[in-house]
Image (cartoon, rainbow, N blue to C red; front, side, top):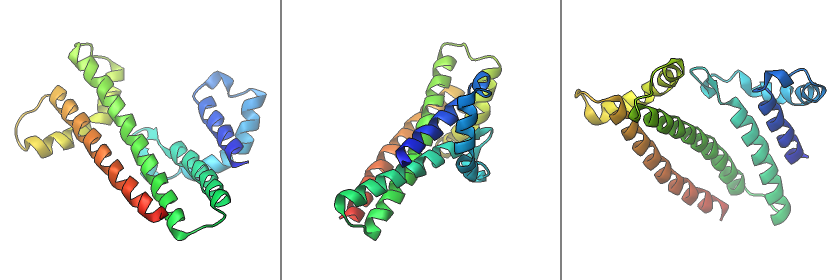
Length: 181
């Protein structure tokens, strides 16, 4: 049941991206079933970054974690605090990892267009509004008061975030495995 509801919520999220489908019968049914749950997370300020809302990731993640937790309990025929903590840590890491992947992808796209000198226009202004606070902060830590180009800041940010994500992933995996045992 939880897996089916997860698919329904995911379909509802995707339908919100296509305005022409909002008034269909299927969209209204999904809206009436899924919106009350999805709106529980909508107001969370910590899930907003500029004009992007990451609350759908958390809402889907909680459903997936619940389904997985119930499947693990059914398979093991037992439950422990370690298993629950491991699942919660995995959920949080999955959310953080997805957000980091999203920013890495945005940075790579931005870097490609900077490198080919096709980086003017309103879409790139929007990208810069999102990325510059992150890339500037990372570059300032490395370069202190020295000048750095946007290209350098993007490359450095991609490398630093990817390395941090890999290292944190190993640490999280170790902790989760320890808690499960």
